[in-house]
Image (cartoon, rainbow, N blue to C red; front, top):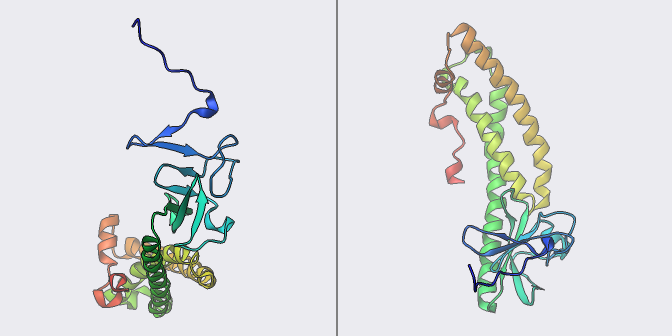
Length: 228
């Protein structure tokens, strides 16, 4: 249309992404380094007006949750260390008041300590179940409760590994439990596969749903993760 001025064309490096909320998003690049860690080799770091998701994160600045850093002309506090889709990004939020930072730091410390304690308690509760599941007699002599123990313990080990991977960022000493948990998962996986073959060939189970239903253990054989 006549009389309408066209917006000036942007250079390729000036283009930015836009979120579904309409806010402009920035991705790290050679022309646009991350404001926290100065990352330029890829677009893993991203930020908007109210948050920064840094892939390298606090490790580059020796920060702990609640501590602040200056970037983009203002102060930001480290909100969490396991953010982003992969759980590997450090999330920063604008720091507006000392009271808010103090409250957030107290909340973060409480949550992180609770996560570490939960992982240790989960590991201690799961260990006897693993040993029992690996020392079962031949399948013909097992009760339904013992058969169900195998599948439920396998699922609980998977949950334990996931929790340890998150909590080891807070307490590095938990990393020594990961090889043990992975060894449990491998051994219990062999046990579960052998049980499923027995159920198919000798008990006539055909559908995966029937197999899963028959291998469910009573509540007393399960590790109650909801109460951890």
